[in-house]
Image 1 (cartoon, one colour):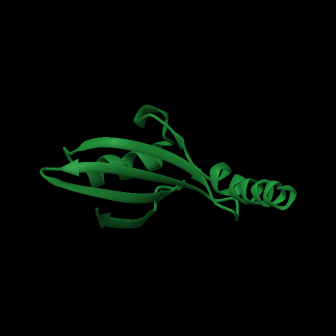
Image 2 (cartoon, one colour):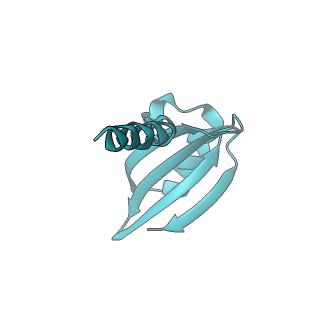
Length: 90
C-alpha cells in the first residue's frame, strides 16, 4: 500500500504543470487592440465560442480563439502583437 500511495502522489504531482499551463478565458473587449483587430478580421461575422489567453513556457502570450463561421468550426492562435500564428478548421 505504501508504494501505491507514493506512486499516486508522484502521478498527481506530475499533472500539476499541465493544469497550470491551461489558459484563462478572456472577453473580446479585454484583448489588446492589435489582437482584437486580428480576431475581428478572422472571425468576420462568425460566432466566437471561446477566447483563452495562454502563457507559453518561453513567456510569450498567445490568444487561442474558437469560433463558428456558418456550419464550420475554426480555431486561430494570435500573438500578443496581433500576428496570426495559426488558423485551422476543427
